[in-house]
Image (cartoon, rainbow over all chains, first blue to last red; front, side, top):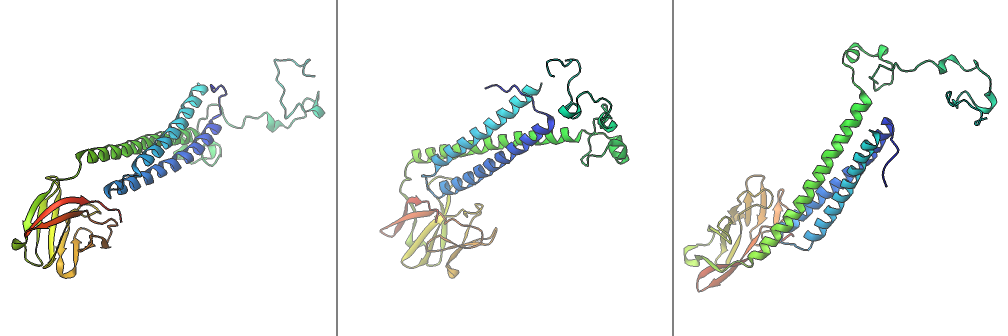
Length: 78
Length: 214
């Protein structure tokens, strides 16, 4: 559904703050996943590698979706 | 009322409330006074007008809310790129694991004979790949153990100390149990990679490696 309503600057700033909070949580989760997976890989534990990669991919998809929303919000303003 | 209203003069909800219809000139004058100069782009963080701001802020006008918005937006973009990098790292690990499985089990390799290795002595050897340095230790007459020489903390070379029954990493003073390879002191939290040994007719062979997380 296209964004048609332009937000004011203060509204956009609030939206960016909210999205940034989610993005930071997801990035920290990914960092933890990466270190835990590397530790498991170096220790020969292969069982967590693909589930962790899938979880990281989901986090990336969520982050990319939020970023896409921000870009579309900027386009709706102009 | 709305049907009769002149569209050229929009209704101001603060003035044209149902009780105030037709009452012109009764609104406070402050209502029509511009709060902020239209040419004043600087909106200071404290909200006070520009004339009340210090001179440095008047000389270097910055649209603070816009600056804040752009900074957070670009930081979010950087975080999304970081997220992409972490995901690439996850799949890089998966690729490395696939390559490791593809290499299969390492071959049997003779590394020493017991006659050349007195009790308390140690030698280094390369196994299973030419870049993988390992260490063989004979702490007792009937015991030989071998581990990767790379510390599991930051890959420094560990030094055997059979008299203290440990392998010592001098970089950050980490230590591993000489019999099991498990960490007993310092920052390492993962055991050393163990080299599986096979003693045949007085010769010591490396027959595989054992990776461990605990």
